[in-house]
Length: 272
Image (tube, rainbow, N blue to C red; front, side, top):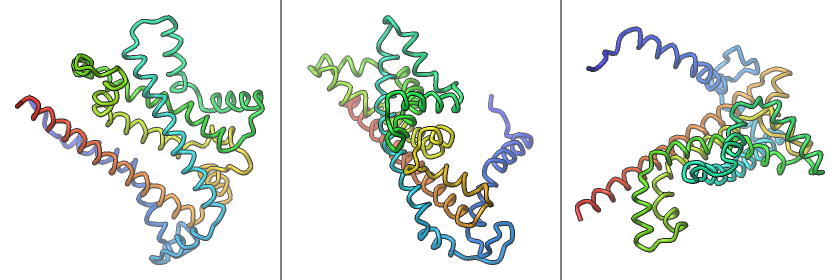
């Protein structure tokens, strides 16, 4: 029995999407405002994008943020995938409860507590705050999200494919590299994108672990907004939205192509 798409469902869906995306749409529109007053429309102009390209403070912060996001999301994806594989395929081993608790703790831990704990750790080991500490902090709290995403895919994975590869002479590492990893690649890519977005958006943890020469873009924007929203911030936010949107669309297309290619290979194998 199929449920009809009622007016109530349509209205709820419309209100939900409006609540989520209307502020972003307004921000994008006013980033092309010719006036310095962000609430007064004075005509279409792209001059604030040009002004943004000459703002070295924002450009330096954007470069630090992008570098941290790429490094931390890559490390988090590798560690999170390994942790997910151990949790799903490791069976019952001594310390499993502690291991799983340490992985999932950042999911429920307040960011203030996480940031303060990491700050005290870096001070205790004598590590100067900078890009390295931000990368370590972002890797710590984002790898748990990757492990959750990859674990959900590994749970539904058909292990007979791995067993067939092992029977044909593959080592466990070769079976993982040639069989398991290509199949779970969409989940791994999704985990990387999630970690990248979390790092790009983080303010609280970065404020505890950043140094004077490693200000991230969210910290810079937060400091600037306290003095008033400028059109340059609107332009910068629009560029960030565009980058994230392009990344999500690209990853979706890549994942879709990978799934279609795998299905075609499976159909050819069945025909043979």
